[in-house]
Length: 434
Image (tube, rainbow, N blue to C red; front, top):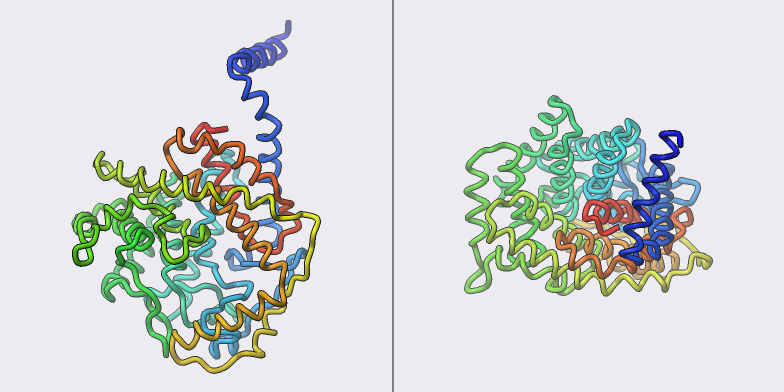
């Protein structure tokens, strides 16, 4: 028997022998293949139309990749609102940072130059968003048609994923020494500005600040602790370790410490335990678990990840409610929201306007409701389940996770928020659940 044929025979014989002992492997193979193919389609769609020329992930496009970018004047006047909410470019820093968890894992697995280049481009997008504004420490959501004007306000939801993505890249082994130093320098530069402002997020005038880190809920605690821990990991500066250790034990009044809150998980995130924004704290907790060397502290993070996974798993069957064949009307023209526009001079005024516009767009764009409720939430929930390091917690949900990944026709989705499919797939591979 030729050597190559013999090798294939022995490999197949070994696989069948294992499968004979564990029949579920044979039963699961078609589901795994379907999920793998679906994830490849999701990856292709992201790079066909949902990463812009500045290497920033868009919120949505038409199926042909078209969308309208804001002009500098629209950004300066806050149209449709000063938060850029409900536009195709609302969450660039957030989505770039979160997406890196998946595509870094992909690049490490494939060792493909193309995949490494995609990682580099998304990182360049993050560095760009933190460099384009004259406001120090400001992480932008996007830029206007001139390539430099931004909407005036970012947020904690933009800035913490920015940190998450850069740390993931810096510690991955993918960047060369020069790239790594550049990433770390920008990471520290932004963090030092935030520390000097008591961890408030800078914004452009007249708003000046929007949001802050340093709270005590599960969501806030996990995010803040990660940033401090990552600063020490990347710099070895003992001041960041001292701040991290102090932050672990701080509490509000007689309430639980931040460390104790970290064990709570997504279900304690009130009043809105949405998976897509809750994923920021879940990913922060996962990275904390990876970084922490104190077994007692690490065990607390593990409990938080297990609690989040158990809670998020309840959302997985939601994928079945999404019909790939139904295509209700999708309103791509965000400028129609300007029918409600008015000048905004404070964050509260901008938020109030955006909420009014949300009611309008939900009424006029039923496709938006379907995708964000029945695609975004199940897929972000799947990712949160996969972030749990305890295989005994994740493995019972394998079939539901595979069903969620393979359910969607990603080439028919307008919104980019299917990107957690990639992260989920690679996390499950890493955990040997597949």
